[in-house]
Length: 137
Image 1: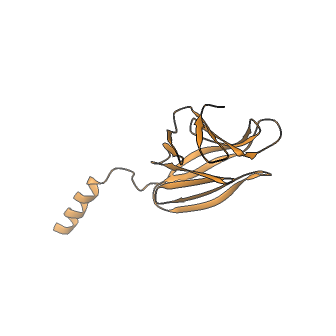
Image 2: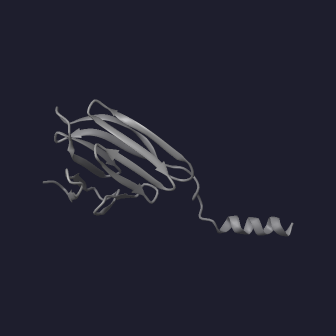
Image 3: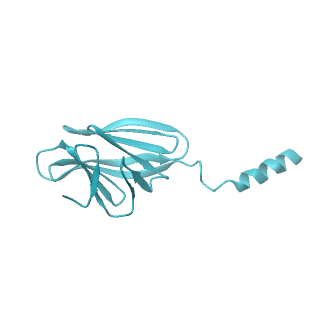
């Protein structure tokens, strides 16, 4: 009985929902003649992945970005393809030769040279050399 009470006390100390899966919405698009991924309020445009034609949505859905488990896959069409891998709280997204991570249960996007909050409303350009700049050329 004492062990059971000790276990219950320990479980009450854990943050609520820390092991629940968290899914985030994404949109895969063609924007400004580039492949783009929108997560939250942030659009990420990949200048190294050209895409001809008018701006258009290619795919949308949900990706795992928190909780226990693992997930991998590929989405897209034609020249706009995204590979993703989730494990240990990190969702790695790869478009063409460049990657970024979605961390902290989908609230932060981490690039090689900066982090951006998913609710920031920024437009992030990933340049051909892998560096980023905010809000356009």
